[in-house]
Length: 575
Image (cartoon, rainbow, N blue to C red; front, side):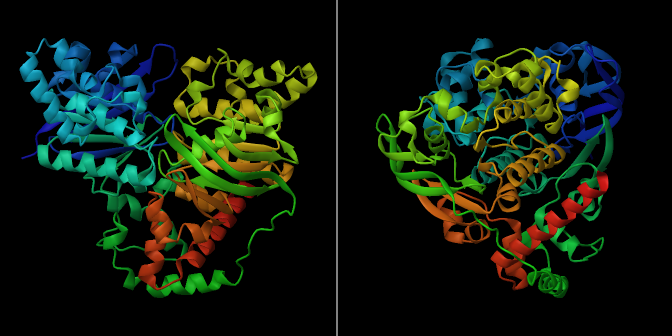
């Protein structure tokens, strides 16, 4: 018999600083031992719903509550956050903000120390939690020095040993490379099954979460529950695109080929779908689009030359004799696992770090002869973590800061700032405090601030991290427009394979400080050996093509060409 552990009854919530309810008449029951995905675009209310479960609402974020929210039989508004933390353990999106201890062991032990646990018992519990989270080999390490995936494991271990009934993960995949994302989902799945925990995952990366089975998907839209269903039922419908959520790539490819799914189809795992039923439709659709495939025209003008560049952090070799050219107007994805050397390469290109060996030349000028400020007008760099870039309190002031520091005329500052604010969908928020913005909104502010200088090359580190599909498409379409209309060369440092294949023409693939591939993006992402070495995840389009007996490289190319055409037609209709 189902045993409810979370119950919302006609529940509404309005933040103290807002005039309208963020959550509206929520009725939801989650039972003991279930694994539930809470899905929704940015601003839909999904994170607010999670904060009601773990007690951050109303005890950290004040506001008006109507109706009832019970966790483990406790009415949350009548309890306190300490009481609720004994039942709900939360792993936040920004794991760095969750760390307390100076070592992994200290951080895992933090709540036990607060409970005045005896040292011998505490050490035993720390070791058990670390082993369960597969982080027991790192107890003496500094948490901030770990990879994104390792940080997730530390945060998970820190909430596990209290015997919490419910584990809540707020966007656990945001900072992880594809393979590490799979590892995180595997870990969550294993703990849920072996320890019979109730698991709630808040995410908008649906295909990545469905790497392992979930029992239910709760789709949140505009503060309400739009759908509470199984993954198969969700994938059969068209509600995802209507809600601004990206469908799994293989589902989109099958629908584009005219496939209509039956109710008995099991769709959440590409590896278990019986493709033979759809093989003829896929092949026919592919052949129709194959003839129109074209390769991008690359300018002959080389604007950046990297020659035999090496760089080390103390004794760690981050880059080892790297060489490549960049042509004017190219769109390049820089991909590879965490720690492969991608961000280090970006820092060298824009002057934050300088090569210890080799040279970097921009239009014939050695960048070693230029200051960081001078390089910044030529090569813009948008860092992965927006909080490391934001300085001013107000959005408009932040976006205009670079131009002010470079002493541009006020009229030009005003014109450029208004332009990029509108393009990044920030103009209506221009006088808002930066402090109230979500992670994704802060990302857009940092992109806007760099774009205001109109650099020749733009390096964007994880442009879509923390963005739902609507804002993802908005930002990427804007960057695509900049590339097309102003011939700005763009390098995307990304873990998002869909971004790479849809918005770039060429990939630079790094692994352990080496450049292991530099080629057409479709060729690179259908090369299983490159994918393995770089810790990437084979896109489901490759799996689908192989199952249908279609050349993966051409199949991916045809799919992306069609998606671009559909998107362009939609944008033309909207405008």
